Length: 548
Ligand code: NOJ
Image 1: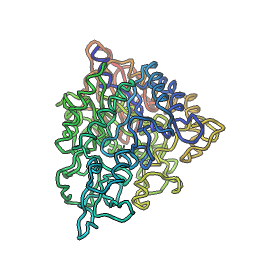
Image 2: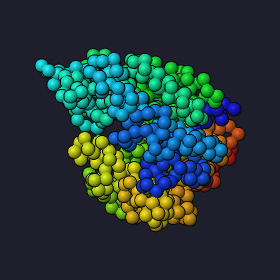
Image 3: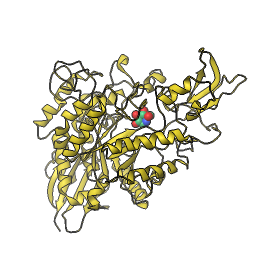
Image 4: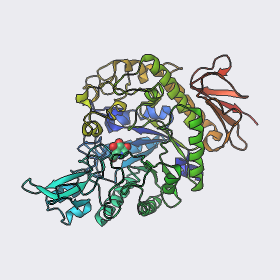
């Protein structure tokens, strides 16, 4: 019973980037009816849950992470009725649904901001945001030296009703279209209590919390020491991230989630520089899980992987939380491109690099699927899609590209819509009579499409499906303890066992080294690439079952 209630401890969660998964109405942009039509695909893939990046009404200045109404659905994606249908039909297939709530900032089209902008700075309506007097004689300079994560100053000067600049500024750690909310204001607290309940009442099983280390800002808005270092993983204390009071918010949210039957769950998106800091968000009365981004930024290196796995599990064990594993999402370069060799800005990877990268990306998925905890897959990862580097600049929508004048290519390249069929106007992403996809898909993706890979037992899709099915069938992979084979872990080879009493042990051999490595005793369950001469070749992960 407990195991079933605590499904989030060992789930495979599939991330749907709504604009890029499936287009039901043919406008070139993915939507909920499209996603509903692909639920059978997700069921066949064997995932336990789907996480949707934001589907709420939004001017889309940051792909929906700028929300104007937390309790509605953007017409771009459909309606509340479509969301309810998705939830119902997913549940009928035993797939859970996680939505993505963005509490650190709203949109300039959210009613709170619309109300504030119509009043003089310093008014009651502005108290829901961080509206601060600027420096300089007339407030013409920003209040402090904080920089936006997307580049440029983190403050925008407010204009009065006549359009003239005032001496006041509002804070936005991301784009100027994403004003930071003031979590000391009771209306903000209530807005999110209501939002959680609204979606939980509609059967949503869990919530991903965007910028979960954000929300609370240090009083007085002190300068940061190194204003040029605005990276999310900055190891220095930041007056706007990881403040102690943020934990009070999560204790409150946990009580709301626990008031439901079955209890609803949270996953924190908190970029923190150590596993210990992340674990503090996962204490028993706070959040259930948090993304572990350490493998997302790791190179293809066995020693690094072993260290990350060990450290992450040790930190999470202190608070009794499961670890999560992520090698792709909508914010970073696709893994075949990352693993296929260093990619220089705008330089498209060679066919050779991509073949190597895809092979490694498959082996990486096999490795994380063999680890204890929850594994995340990003839509298209199962197909081995690469980063699309050479998109036309006119198509790029990421504010990171715009705010850095193209110095950063941005994240559009990992958000290019899925290819479902070998041919057709959008490779089956939308109806054959519909528009091309909102970001142009490479023509080569026809050969990577679901249609092509479904009929090839050695394809990435077929191998990932197989691994998820084997994981489901082997209790040791779901709840066995991890034991390292320290003798075999060398020269880039990573070997661990999953051990559970009264069940066959499963051994995972991940070869990230340069030469072939021997197999282990037992039956081969599945492998990310073919074994050669009874050996696990480089860039391959294989699983073996051992009785007794
Ligand atoms: C994290 C999200 O994953 C990313 O896509 C977004 O741009 C930022 N948070 C800001 O909301």
